[in-house]
Length: 398
Image 1: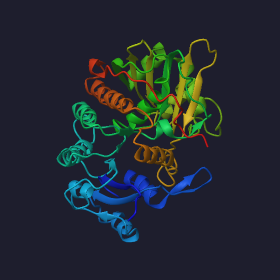
Image 2 (image 1 turned 180 degrees about the vertical axis):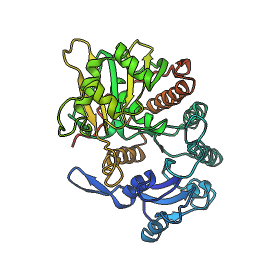
Image 3 (image 1 turned 90 degrees about the vertical axis):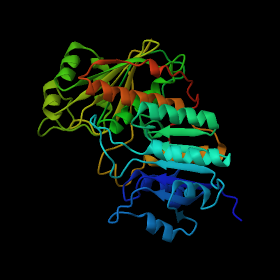
């Protein structure tokens, strides 16, 4: 009998280019890693698919091609392999694509919480648990997210979540020096409401959590959108120096002037390119201010810049997550994420604290709320979330 760890995947849908396909296929097929083809030292043996897209679904093809993989009709069956006891050693929870409702705040109601609760019921009933990875933010709802976090602590299982941004390749290859005194931080990126915002918060948090004292939580957040964004930029609400440093790191900066592809765009050229900009600025409890800015039409990647005490130039880098077509086809940025998931399944130790994703989830939901309430400042006493980062660098460097 095989002693290789058994993995279950609970997914919203499994079609080409869905997150489930990018992640689960790497467990089935392997992926390029360190100059060779790497095959995980574990087997994906069970699959629950909430919505089957008859035209695009590939889950049934995968089950036919990989004899160890079975598709089950319920989450409980996927976790127990149709029996009465927990029968897997790790759980992937991936609910990012599919046909789900959208609320009045333009949040897609992904069923991560519902999947999680059904999983937790099996853990409680059997008295057993396994390491869990939740793709992207914990939930569109802060209350749901906090419940998921609290349940993981109650039941004592390793829990990791989040975007691929903090662990993907960086250009240049650098990390925030551990213990650095960070005075201001920024991410400029492309994105969309809620789920896209999460990537930018994670870009910032993966860097600033390494500052002196570690993470201490967030006091407030405020949205700036459209005309209010342009006015805030003109008023110097955020650093112009960091703004320019981020743009200079972009590998997908759209040419703003016909015939030129290398000049730095003026503010008028940026305004001509970006129909609806938005930003969220927030203050950490230690006084650090961070700003995430979305400039669709100008920027196609995720760029970070930070101002450090006693450093003349901003510390800046670009984190590799390109937009289509490279985003949807090869999607190499999933490989470092999957490698970190593998390591947690093998060791029982998350690569980074779940508190990071709890905080970025809270920032995402609070930012959406600020936008919904006409860009008011939102006080965030519930984001009093302090933690220490993994002192080792966890992004991929080779």
